[in-house]
Image (tube, rainbow, N blue to C red; front, side, top):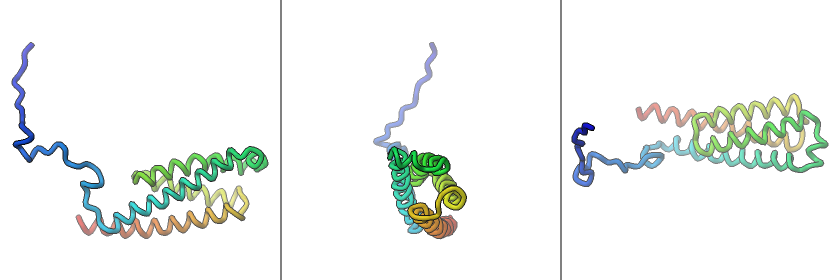
Length: 151
């Protein structure tokens, strides 16, 4: 067995070899609009968590769930899953989180107009989601222009 000598670097002496440098949000300089975008994604993620848990509550309600139409039951199951996926992705700041969230919102709007009753909680949730999407677009545009300015 042939072994070659391994060059050892003393990290305590050589400060250029910083293995323990911070990785993650603390090591990245963010502008004010980029910070606001992260904060807004957490707010939207919180809303989606509450909405997803609301759908799970309806799903486990028993008699109220079985009394719904087949379209209502299907929509409840679909939103119970996709809302929580979008919520976690938004909360973590995942790049695909906003895409899943926008798909969930578009599905909510289509379901509200086509399948479900346009009254009560469906109307409130749909309007809240549309307002959140409009605010997200505004904050995202500001954060993108700020990002382009720093390059």
